[in-house]
Amino acid sequence: MNRRDALGRVALLFGGTIVGGAAFLEGCRQPDAKSVAGLSFSTDDIAFLDELAETIIPTTNTPGAKAAKVGAFMQVMVTDCYEEKDQKIFLEGMKTIDEACQKSHGHAFMKATPEQRHTLLSGIDKELKEYNTKKKKEDPNHYFGLMKQLTLLGYFTSEIGATQALRYVAVPGRFEGCVPYKKGDRAWA
Image (cartoon, rainbow, N blue to C red; front, side, top):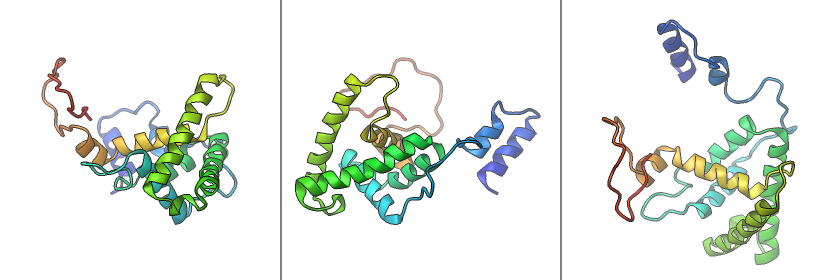
């Protein structure tokens, strides 16, 4: 049994309908939403996104974004949930990062060392911050902002991120409004 069947049966079992249940069960793509023509990610693209995410959230004493398969998560979110304009921005952003690495280091992003990747993305992050301070409501999203948001969302909602990077209680007990916090403690999932 797949998840959609299980959720559908649970809804029937409770004798009611879930508000927006059809949209929930069908995913986030609207039927009339347009997508970039021929939008697909190759295994090389997903590997690129994994390395990009790993540079943003590297492996330390906890697994990094690559272990959480954030590249595959990004691919699903971009193809299924992003509007056409943001899909174009995201895809162009991948090319922009690769070209910037070629320009500054003489080779593609995938051939760069972790230090070179970090230096490159730190510069792009500064560019993003400047862009956001001057951004008007009608201006398009910045490609690196989209990538960072998906990296964080994909990592901290993954099993690895929720259970190893954050504190996790599978079956919480009562609500405790005030929990002691010591400097260095992980946040709660």
